[in-house]
Each structure stands twice: as C-alpha cells, then as structure tokens.
Image (cartoon, rainbow, N blue to C red; front, side, top):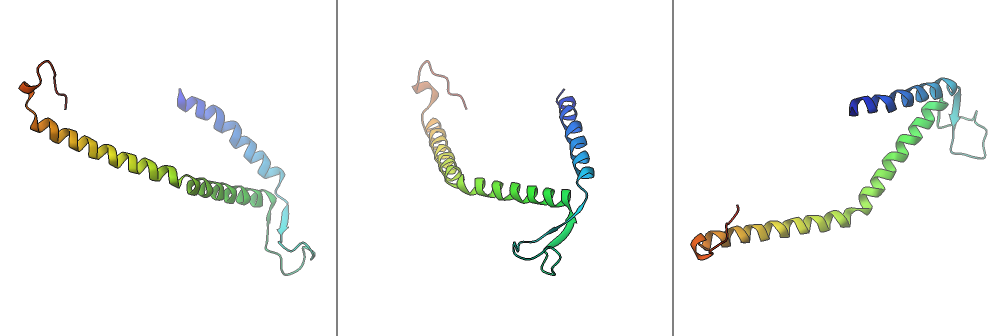
Length: 112
C-alpha cells in the first residue's frame, strides 16, 4: 500500500519536473555583477535555466539542513546527557537487584 502511494505521488512529481525542464531549457547566464552586461567575461556560468534553478534548490536545501542541524545541537546534547544518566540509573538498579535476594521481598517479582 505504501509503495502504491509513493508511486501515486512520485509519478506526477516526476512528470512535472520533466515538463518544467523541457519548458525552461533556454541557456541563461548567471552573473553576480549587477552593473555589467551578461556578455562580459566575468559571467559566472552559462547553463539551462532548469539546471540553474535545480542547483539553487539543492544549495538551499543543504544550507537549510545545516542551519537546522546546528540550531538543534543543544537538544541533542541534552538528550545524550539524559540517555547517559538513564543508563547509569539502570546499571545501579541492576546492581541493587543482585544484592537483594528475592526472598527478602515477599510478594514482589523482579523482572530483568
């Protein structure tokens, strides 16, 4: 079912990307100098418009993902500290279970 839903979404998206690429295949000049004409030797690159737009999209996703990863660093640090503390408590509880015999605790069943 999940595979069918993926295909149901991915096929129209693929068709849309293909149509976009065909419609925008004109060569454009990318330049970061707003004061000179695009025919100057300082042009950055000449490529089809769809390639430029896809490259900008990919760079944007990478920058956004990196920014998100960096801002969530404190949350990951706190989670790591909490996990280490939980492991320490579990080790301590296991050591205490070994020290206390089951007969000393009537009515309780120790689960490991």
